[in-house]
Image 1 (cartoon, rainbow, N blue to C red):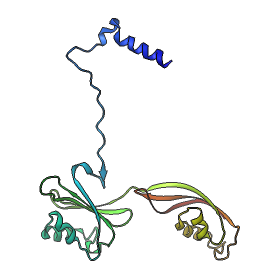
Image 2 (cartoon, rainbow, N blue to C red):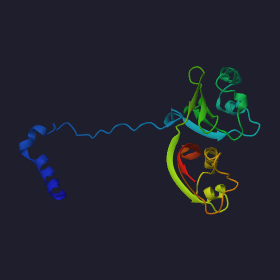
Image 3 (cartoon, rainbow, N blue to C red):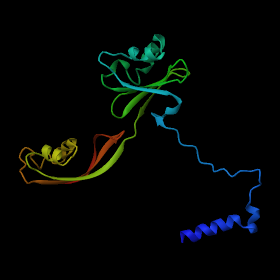
Image 4 (cartoon, one colour):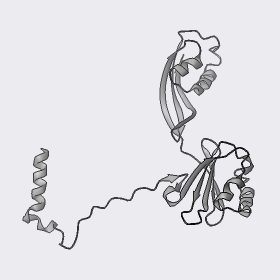
Length: 215
């Protein structure tokens, strides 16, 4: 069937009876594809900048970071004062991630500075025209999971043995707070649970809704 279709299509385009569909000799047929969507990071097009990602070091302040990327003390002071209602820059935490979006010209000056407050929230400082500050949140992905296990020694160990997020133990303890003594569970007890696990950037950040559980 495929061979016959191919022969038919070839005949259709080569036949003189369909000259009204022929293109003029000075016109070339060009396949046009839609332009690819720009890659975004924190809503900023990555291709337009040189991107530098790092973590806040021990005893490192905002000025220690931004001075290296062409942001002077005057702008840093203005940023610190303007940012207070949104995020107090004195609360930068060691180990938290930040990203600098540098211009691609010879100056290599920071156009944006993005600091991750926690797993989901971040604050973005835009230096391009005049200083602007905005708080954002990463996309949280919810993955529904069904897990079951058998108690061998403790609920915690049963979750570890079954590759479950041990943070699930807390909502289960809350659900059965008045019916089960989790310090008195016995070997051979079983459980089934249907729940959402939350992910950001492909990494688990916690447990969402617990839909059903049987113990």
